[in-house]
Length: 273
Image 1 (cartoon, rainbow, N blue to C red):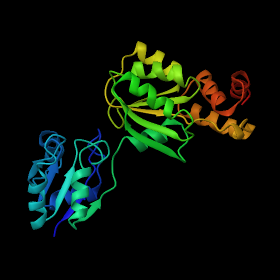
Image 2 (tube, rainbow, N blue to C red):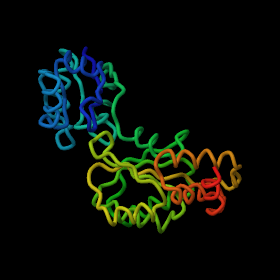
Image 3 (tube, one colour):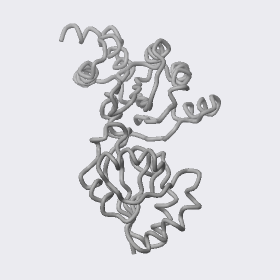
């Protein structure tokens, strides 16, 4: 009985793939790929000649029998166009069915946009929520943001570049004081992080229309009992934002919103060292 390998693939830079992933892709009997044309670029780059079959959102249920026929005879690797299969990509149904039928399912660690965006955002990383893609309709999106208004953990979502400016305007209305970060094109040539309040980042993208893959991160609500922060905590948070490239004003405003301090007092910490 074959093993189903869940193999992450690069989200941009083709070097972001593990040696183990390359070995597995060479050794399995079949690769189930979200788009064989897209995956073909990666496989050709690494001179991998393993047979492929398509497995995507529109054929995923109809392809199960064919993939399990292959698993009966050997191992199969599941890959998506980019990143980790099953994370906002096809894969859940196949993985679940493989488990139910008694196949070994072996997930490999590897590339995704969530973790690089989080650690590069300057927002708290000790506890966070990943909520996938935001709703497309404005009313549903508004309801979603209202539902997480009291959430204290960092929130991570994906958003379309075509809807980002409107989403930021909505955030500026509903959660005006939250620090946010837009991580764009992670691991690609034009990778970019924009940090600040929703209104500040909105104004930037209103002038510079976004393109490419967008990961949006929203700082959690501050618990009232945790305010105000002591000076050391303010200085550490402030320095982290300055080290990440934020302007003095933007960093001071974001830390003030988090800490319960007045912006002018936080800004004074920047200038007095």
